[in-house]
Image (cartoon, rainbow, N blue to C red; front, side):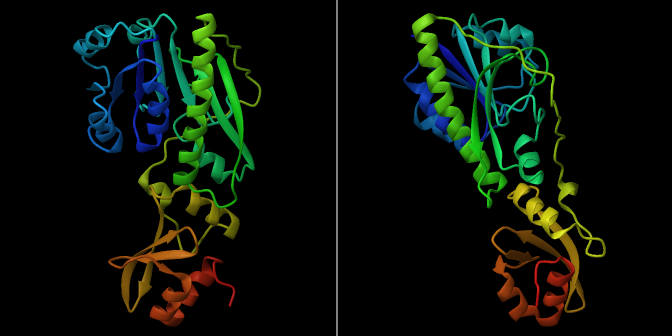
Length: 278
């Protein structure tokens, strides 16, 4: 039986944890101090370590479990070689793109922003460079036309859990990992998304296609928003998937309800954004 340590954060990685529970999972390492992952670990009595490995004592804590395989998904912090070297079989990183495309912190957002019809999940061997290690396995995924950051993230890591299950089954048979070097062709990088990236200007809005992609790529965070005038007051207006908006201080509403509530002001805003044709 393997002794597996999982490194990750976010509720969407729980399907991976579930696959690992009967494969020798002995520890979860996260830098997320609370949330659904932590709650799940507590309910399942899985040991949990909160760390970004800035303290040497945390490295020693991992050593206590004598792990031989690590699985990483959405951990969000650099894993030093002093940790990687503790795993005879290494650490496998689940990355939600078909590497070498969309390396870096925001592959799912860039997939949606680019309008890609197909993306996928890569499992690579972790090394001391970002998203650089050799590829163990990949799986293509068709991207639904209405996919948001939330729904596509869930889909990617669900598929990643299936891929990891298959890889571990192979490792259990041969006690080794097979991989191939990453190609340097078609390599591309993503940047960290910040709150300000969701702001748009009503005087100079993006095209309808770019805007609808942005709404989906930035939902639920950071969201797409702008300052508008409603009833002689400036308000923050959030643009949401499924033809929905949210006026500052109000609940989300459909475009029709927005128009019914704010009349010509709402119509003008939606027309300037090319989200309303009448």
